[in-house]
Image 1 (cartoon, rainbow, N blue to C red):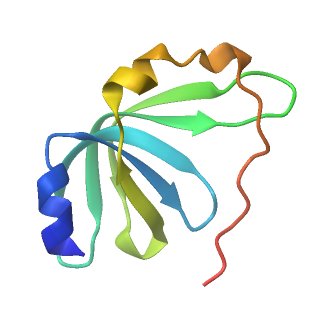
Image 2 (cartoon, one colour; image 1 turned 90 degrees about the vertical axis):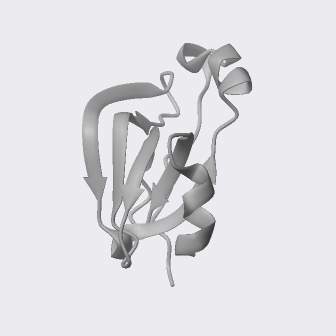
Length: 96
């Protein structure tokens, strides 16, 4: 997995953790246990009653053993989304 992550360095990624949280940010680095360093990051909190809340975090580290999914974000599409009008169930925990 580590060799695959190298292509995401300095690109915007979305990370879903094992407890269902969604973090977005610029991947700045990682180590052999896939601990992740995100810069200019924020967490997207989903709700069925209000839009997606984006909590600004700045520089953020996520432990590798808590990561379920990592994917690159298409910034062109992401910038066109109206998060105030998107509703959704929060993600549940990921069961391994």
